[in-house]
Image 1 (cartoon, rainbow, N blue to C red):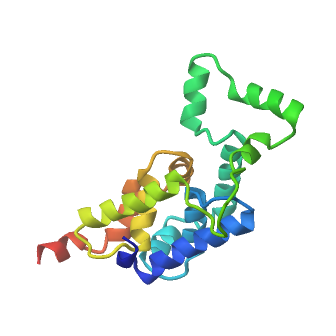
Image 2 (image 1 turned 180 degrees about the vertical axis):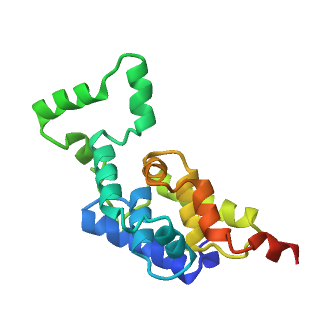
Length: 189
């Protein structure tokens, strides 16, 4: 699959590994892929990210991702669903942090030991890479670019997609930003 990745997509994946290293994470997550995409300077995805204003709201996105990590990786939808059956995650989190310290749930998620020097990709990050392939094939592209990675991040349910949506980047808005240049006309010819 990686032989189909463009230079920009490979830079995004490599950048995600660097993001994980900087964060001291034991593995590469969807969050690291997103942060790496936000760092990219060239390409369709960087144009879409800029046109949607995500670069300007990076600090807000990082804060939302940190809050989700603090909740143990629960999405807002998860939190609301649990509240619907009478489980207050905020109260539980406060109690756990009172006993074990602030951020204990975020720290507990990344304590796997690595046997090799490489950081493995989580199942979620692997799923994003696979989804990017499906998106590229669905668009009849012969390559997997960083734009496909961005679309995959919005399409895969979870914290990253929620944070992107909260900041105006849904699958539909990203697709419009990427392909509003007459893609349909190019395919017809």
